[in-house]
Amino acid sequence: GGCRTGMAKVTNAYDLPARKVIHTVGPRYAVKYQTAAENALSHCYRSCLEALIDLGLQ
Image (cartoon, rainbow, N blue to C red):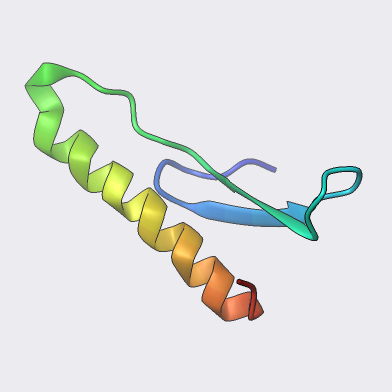
């Protein structure tokens, strides 16, 4: 299945030149909700880095 905005999911890379692929869902940007979008984007990065650490990847 998919994942929610700001969350990360790790899958095998299959034919790509990597062992794993980290997928994340970025926010929809709207000027009215700029701060929320920036926070969600920051969470995307944090989730990806946490996934790297959890799996011992570089």
